[in-house]
Image (cartoon, rainbow, N blue to C red; front, top):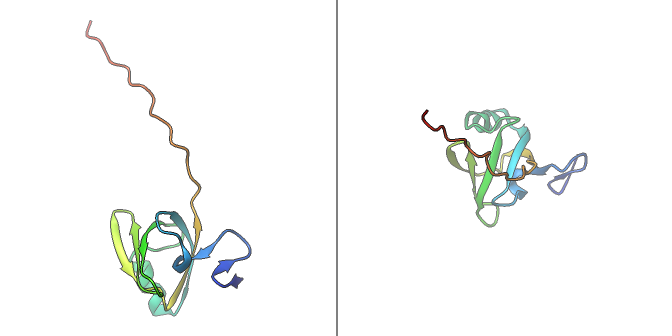
Amino acid sequence: MFVSGFSLDKMSILLQHALPGTTYRIVSVEGAPESTQRIRELGLTVGAQCMVVRKSPFGGPVELSVGSRHLGIRLTQVDVLVEPCERVPHTSPAPVKQLVPA
């Protein structure tokens, strides 16, 4: 159930309302069959992660980073519901043991 772009059951929001610089996981894609098919062809499938790079004002296109691709899409005919990905604390890698020739 949506209330002005937010879902009441989880911390899910519409991709149009997502914050730039944040990584999200796609929960659902809804809309006209042609529009949802095109969105899925671009790699925005349920379970995929995307990062909002920037948003245009007044409902303009949204620039997304999906894997190694950057997409600029207008989300007027489709509702992409996303939830923020949990942040994994950054840890330094384990020290590498150097082998000393015998």
